[in-house]
Length: 354
Ligand SMILES: [Cu+2]
Image (cartoon, rainbow, N blue to C red):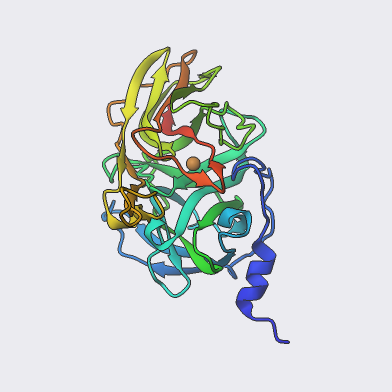
């Protein structure tokens, strides 16, 4: 039987990673896929039009996601990706997911972009010596990584020649049949950036601790519906820097993600729930009401996190951490089979070192 192109790619790419998408981040890229697993489309850049700016929509995959009957429809993929540009600096990036036929994929179509991270295997995380630097990450809420703050700051994540990148994606399929999807990243950059362009470093703060022993996924405390999780110990800064952008991340049930500097809250990011139809799903079989038909109540999922725009500078010696507040009676958490899925509390700071 002839093997199709997509079967070869999916066969090459799939590495199932138990225990959370970040639990086993390799320090060198896993399977290389070169240009075979990515198709790119040129888009019109929005920022720095007076410079050599560029923008590409990179579509990674196709990735085969099993039905909800296998491991709750959860599957992780790790593979090397080509750098989005050469001799350039990334000024903006945002992730998305679509079905292989181009249709929109989100909670309302039973396909979650559970987590996505891009790692640079040539650099080490400033918060954990055993992890590579992670310049891009997204949950299903798909917060843009606006490193240049919408083109208002001459800053970006510089990509040097020869650096190797890999992508780790965790997808969740709530449908009863397997699906094929593409994971998309809309990359915007400046080629040969001028000398005054500042280099941005990501700083990953996580309630799971600096080196994410559980891949960032923390179990819900027993019998708790209102609880908070904190990064303990916090990260101790060994450099000073200006914070340009923050990516906060919570799971459903979350009420607030606080960034804490020297024990003082410096940013309180609030989730928006079900703001667009993609983030709303019907909850079926909710129970009987006075003999009436089963209620079909809508579930709302996190669709955005508010931006932290007044965050302070990092000074060497500061401690920085995060605190995640959850209230499961206000917002229904995610299930995983017959138990509750673990939760997260993350803030990624994009900073310019002094
Ligand atoms: Cu998460």
